Length: 470
Image (tube, rainbow, N blue to C red; front, top):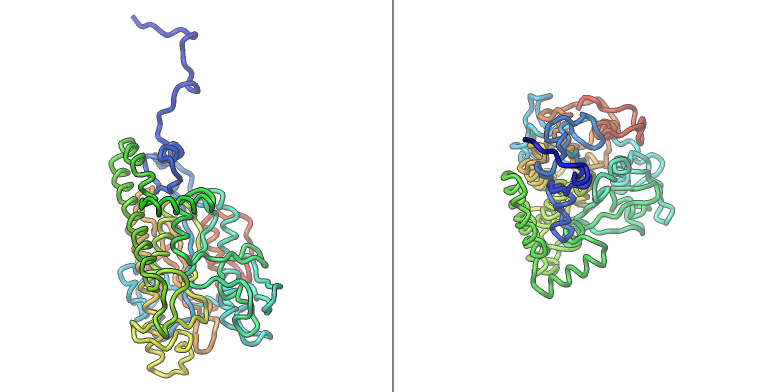
């Protein structure tokens, strides 16, 4: 005989203890603010079942986060080595892009994109400042070395205004260069134009962070700036890692995750530990520059290690859904960094004015190839990391790699060297060389914003439309 409990002793669903594992409960159980990768076990049931609506703001059709990043390399490119041969899906990469051969099906090389507002016009010299200042704004920056700077809101910030509330950080701004907000840096143009990519408003650039330690603490230290400082000091005093504060609780909660997610958590924690170790090792080496060689601002002294540390943390920021929008200034336009390890000790900017001298052009090609190798390294990190929907992070990303100068020798701003990497969650068609008639680069940015679900953006910068066939 079945006996039903009386109403007096029944427990409603609202009163019943909730033992379900949620992302909020997991984070609270760790006892510290540690960013975590997305786990299938923590996805809402609707996403686990694949019933999410396509086209939601800032997501892919599978419900995974969609990411966007803009990565800037300086001083244009050796045009003879940059462009592929062929067209469409039938193309072979040029000498510069050979490091990307293994990722050929994940990139689109786009020819024909211009930034007319970066050209001299009536403003005369200052192409490096205009190249930087116009790249993500599409506007003609005001020529001034004073406080009355004026550019435009950058496309990353347009997107961040609508999707930034979905993540801990609306956007992330990185650099491996100095941070300069004032002074005369290029023929009467303020340094603010040359050392910033992201602009929150026409008069407010967002200074990028060049120090890997500070980026790491921001992502993994948690709390306010004062709290992060206290955490770092405590860790130094006790010789304990940030992860040591949370690993015990993490392990106690691992049994609540599915087996695939337990493996993902183990791999993630190991990758965070490895990056922390690399930063600590770099800090121990100090920052004494090599004589006669430009060294990156901050740490470490190795520019390649500096770039890869920052790329690693950008990948982690995407993996943990800490942000979905980022900019990374590898070096400001006009940078005269030397590359003696690859046979280019004269300085990048100096070499870019090669005057068609074969040996100087050869060295520019080697520098371009070196930067492409670092970019390929980053894309491989994204491609080898599984996202919450089973695809790779690269599949669920849109990554622009380019420069606001085309030919550094002549300071041209048409037919810019630009690559679009990633599948955009399935909305992009990579694996091709797209040759366009002269087209504003801002048309590309509008097309990307559309895929993010950005509303009411009919015009941006000097756009004349939007690139829909991407």
